[in-house]
Length: 321
Image (cartoon, rainbow, N blue to C red):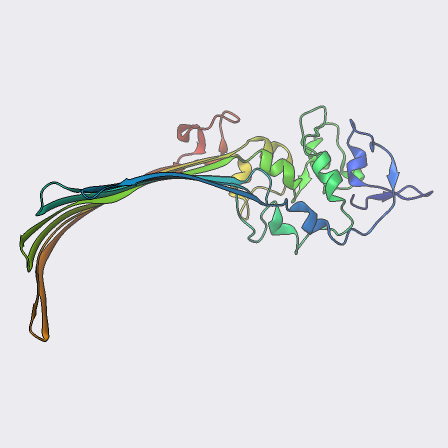
């Protein structure tokens, strides 16, 4: 992996060689260019889409119901999306003049993982700034679960051996600015769920061959839930990682809920008639609109009092009201 300390004979001690517990421990390695290592970090995205639907129609009614599922495996570790879509569409002639119709849709969307390639992000955000082209990404992935006996997660980047202190082993073994990107993903599960319900129900009455009265109720409702859990182990395994560019690296819990609902009540009177060579069309109507939007959420600050207890009241610093 990363060039470390020359041993005076052949090769160098890579930084992972200083961690025990794997076949490369305390061995030398050669510096070998890995021109595609950043590319190899990204997985092959896989997307599957399934759909089933039923429909039937007669002179007096029509009915259609469908269900579709979209499943996506993300390019980044521990990322993905699952989306479900339900739809029902019906129309029924109650009499020769009166028709009722409905269209109802319900969509759920579940997104997981941290998707962020901004500056200083512990995964792909480092590749074009502070990363190393001699890192073998297969080894980085292989060692994602490697710890020291004192519980410090191994990183591809830590300080020099002369910083080792038996009373402060984190200063040497801890990630120096940069974690193993796979380990970081394992220690920061994030979920976002979105539920959306929308549709309409309408009545149409043909008052005469040229006049139709319509009434429609429309609804759109959205709820979202987000939960981010950044393990306290990030702070316990990092040196100069937590701070301005990574406040979550102290260990952090973030949660948010949102709700929005809009209702429309619509009515119209439609006139349409052909008089000799002229087509006369006109309509008049109204729309009553009502909307409610609410949200609440919070996050911990400067770490968690009890490691990996993900509650807002476990914040080391409480947020001002």
